[in-house]
Length: 422
Length: 216
Image (cartoon, chains in turn blue, green):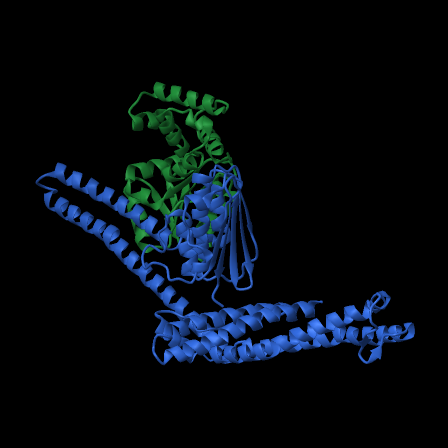
């Protein structure tokens, strides 16, 4: 049955494939007059879509998914065309398309014939019983009971074997062919990985550079300026110590107040770079501290995390902090739960509350599908963040995944996956 | 008054020695690790020790751990813990034994000499000195607490100062009111929060801190 479904499903691909092949031919022809070039670009999208459809079909049938590794199509149609033209996967897809068109119809036909034959064979007595001209089946004239039974036996077994053994074998063969043609070559796989790593590395470097600039700016604006002001006050006070002790005392007091303000700013700055409690207590202790500081009871569960890079730890901390702030501010919840676990190379953060939900409506957030888009160059690690958007940005900076589940009426559940870069 | 200092940063060591030396304290030992602190406490049995949270070799919460260990070995040993940042969980760990003679302050507070010395003397005398930032963290956390909301602005100020460990006299002078007015505010606060009235001293501070720290 599965084999039949697979093969019949293949007919749809074959028909679509034939149409596509015709379209490609037409677009190629038209390309000689240049007008066809954009159309050719469109057919590439169609080809990829169709090939992906068969990746799903054949992958499902084989029980092991078939990956794809295309060079991403970006820019104008000419550039897309050039990318596709230099991508070996395009030609392998075309090869698959031809094979699918050539084989798909016949395989589907085999499935239909096998079923029709089988059904006719097992219902032969009925046909015989009907008052009609005696027909014949596979060379046996159906004119007597023994002949009918013989035909039933021979054809039942024959078509049964076709259904039970030959069709699955054919389907497996086609699925194998699809896998052979549609699976990316090792080279393509590596190429795709390199492209992906290049993009995430560039994003990480951007984020890092922006972070350094922010720290530099903050140090200049707060601490350095503050220290200059203090030094000036102390210098003037020193000169006026004898002549105007009252004025000197006022300046010294202002200098001390300035020092206190600078210290407070430095503390806030440090907390925004890497919260000290993280280095003191690790993620477990830091998350527990956040939970303790929350206005509602927060249950904390931290699994065995293994080695987590400092950048990921810091991001995880800020995400939990922002999520709990959101809960306190908007959720009207009476309890929340934070769970931090490790799955292979990912740290998984789950923050849930029993509040009124609807978080999506109140914050527009970057959907998970945009996760690989480079984050804006500024304010990536601003300690306060801006709710869900801030969380999404932090997750994107690490090339992680972020989902919000918050139906109106609640409850809200956030999930962030942060790769640890192995 | 004899003091042991546990601080690894030379600048801060010098600063503390200068400050304590000029205000009538006797610095009997300056150490820079948690283990050395325990040894120095054993040898000198000082009136109070000033301990930095971050100490070698780990530069994590070595000092805090040493402080907790010291309090376990010598219950009630007055300790003033200094830190670059305050965390409520740290305060909770220090307060866990329920004894007085404990301080937990931001390092910044050292610059207000009179207040710092006052805090140090209070701790040495068995009192409490909680950083205003710890108290404001606790108050923010309990923002939706109904009894706390029923306090007047003045009563909240008094509560905050009381939680920091100040006695009625100091509270009165800080808020520029009479001591009688302070006592009245305090009995109002205790009534509104449903706490049994308690005498002046660290027992009262601990009761207020316990109230603030309890989950809503």
